[in-house]
Length: 195
Length: 195
DNA sequence: GTCTATATATTGATAGAC
DNA sequence: GTCTATCAATATATAGAC
Image (cartoon, rainbow over the protein chains, first blue to last red):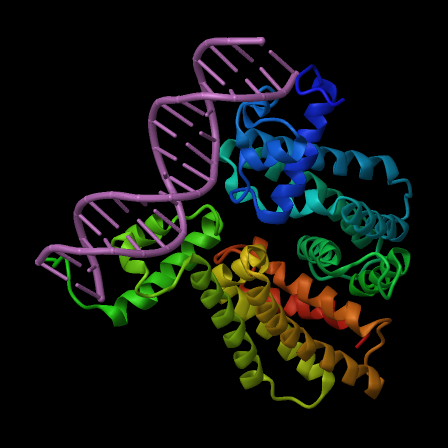
């Protein structure tokens, strides 16, 4: 028999974040009610407030966790010293990681508007940190003379936008495997930076 | 003296669309109330329903108008027969047009979730039509042997994502003029497609 | 830790006066 | 064509029982 009450803090907390992320990504932060999240989790709305002070804090937690994990995962993977090899690592990493966390990526790009200025600044700072990782690769390649690109800042923005765009159309089981997509995008990026 | 009532259908209609677009882009469709739109226009909420059957129809009207104008503007500008010249036209057009209509572009990418399936299909179809214009350029360049690219479909998505990304960071009066940005992006696109 | 019940506010949309 | 007034639904968040 399912019990209607009890202690499940170790289960309910993560479940709330997972369901909130799913619903926010699907319908938008403002369009999702705390009751909807609670229903998806299997608790009553009031119970959510044991885990988050309010709705925005729930969103901030999701965005910050995602950005922290993105940066940590990249730094754990980045190994090569050669600029071209590092750039290929970045391209493949970004596509793969973002496809694995499509909902969180979507939120990170779409729901910044719903943050207070303080929270917005925190997330923006993390985003900038990640971008700087790519820019450093491009600059090192420029300095080494192995990349020919007109502007490392614009190339950074162009490459990240291009790679993140994969999330808008890629479907598992489609015409191309994820690995093949990575290879094709790497080909375009490599040419674009003149490597 | 400002009058409180009267007939202004020719002014109020466009004003409603303009303010709705501004507010939807800034706060998100679901986060904006009909009362907020009415207040921005300078009428009462009830008056809005003389111009739109409901809130979603207001959004659809904005999205459809934007996509129609985007496609029409491109077709009016596209002149060259040479694939490379046409691709440069596309790159410059896309950046310029999207920067001029940043709010509408933002809505077109962010608020599709809030549409009914029927309305979603209409907008998606227009988006696909626009993408096909670029893909046709890339294919003609492939066929003519002047572009070297591994996959015209992926290149289409990559280029559009890259170009649209300019909207997320470009600020008038910043380090680079819009024209300079166009030139730098064209350089990267040209290289990426192997032209 | 979760429930039920509720306070307080706000929403989209409509009716009828002017 | 716009206003005021209002309905019915829904929102976030809290209080207190268990």
